[in-house]
Length: 113
Image (tube, rainbow, N blue to C red; front, side, top):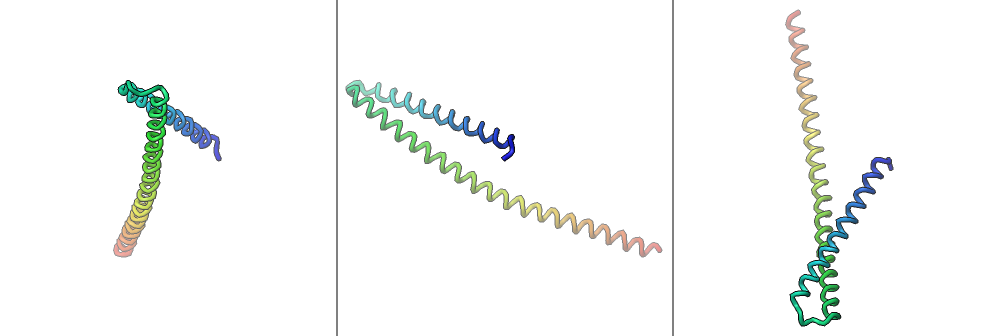
């Protein structure tokens, strides 16, 4: 693997790690906010509710990210196929145009002799 690609991959991994940790922290903040609205909970109950909330939220985030990644792969395939078809059409049109212009020039050269 080229150093530039390795660097980009490493940076993407660090970015993903930081984004995921930020999401975990946000889930923890929201869980604490939720349990603060329930003053009758004991400390142990509060911790359990927060833990369950964070676990659930992380599972939902992971599922959402997986769906997004899968869709991105699908779209990449669709757009690559469309690009390939467009490229074939453009090349065919270019070849046809060059052939037509070349043929016209040849006919004009033969007629003018």
